[in-house]
Length: 54
Image (cartoon, rainbow, N blue to C red; front, side, top):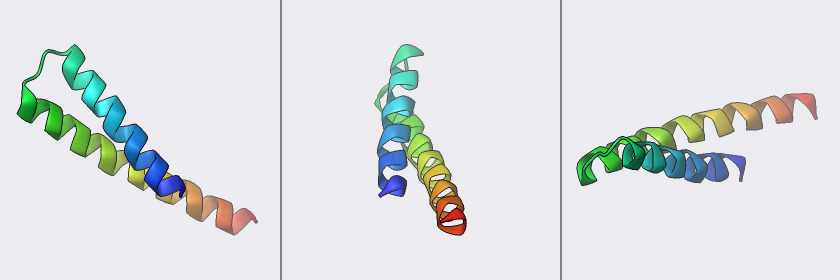
């Protein structure tokens, strides 16, 4: 669940950053995709860390 939330949040943040920089549709898609991957990886590491602690 954390991975999915991280992926969605990362995509939204990437989309906002590309819009703020004035990117076209392909730029926005690329930033959103990279943000989604980064958010999913961060969520994965958080999930693994929580499983080890608990």
